[in-house]
Image 1 (cartoon, rainbow, N blue to C red):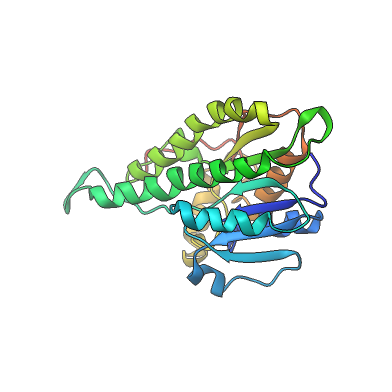
Image 2 (cartoon, rainbow, N blue to C red; image 1 turned 30 degrees about the vertical axis):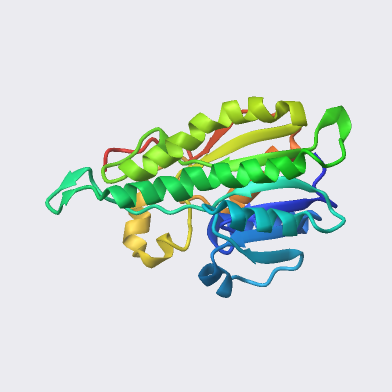
Length: 252
């Protein structure tokens, strides 16, 4: 799939997985539009070929305005990578009481519904792009997690939302096939993100020790490389790819 000369949307692209992906796509020649919250954009790095658009992925009007901005130029919108997400931890029942329903709903709203919202509205615009070889027009890469399969204690909301993205993947690929749009999903394991930067080296080493091989945490750049590969590989469609060093998460 043609990346150079195309427009691309990356959600949650002000930091972490999204920032690495935005930089990778821009280096490949795409015009990249990062959709993130205003407070995240304030501290985002300046990257050549990357524009930041303040967006709430759960708000259809906000996302539609961002899609309009991404497709307003000469470069047709062809690529979407959804990285936006949150991951608060809470048990169904704990000493503090029952899991807060509003928190559960918020996680699902941001991670799952936000992913669907961006994918659907962007797909409408990608479907209007000129056809490339074999009728293809674009590609979507969504982000799940190994927690979709082996959610740990306290991850009930997060795992639910990421499991929904895994379930969304194949029917989305089938729905959008007639428009020449492929849909794939990456399920990362434990990756070096800003959230992990706040924990001790000892804790990080403990996390790495549980990974079969290589015994280290994943890197955002590795996610970005995989996302680009899935965008460019014309025959991978409807697939969920684990990027986890063969990790299978324990209960805690």
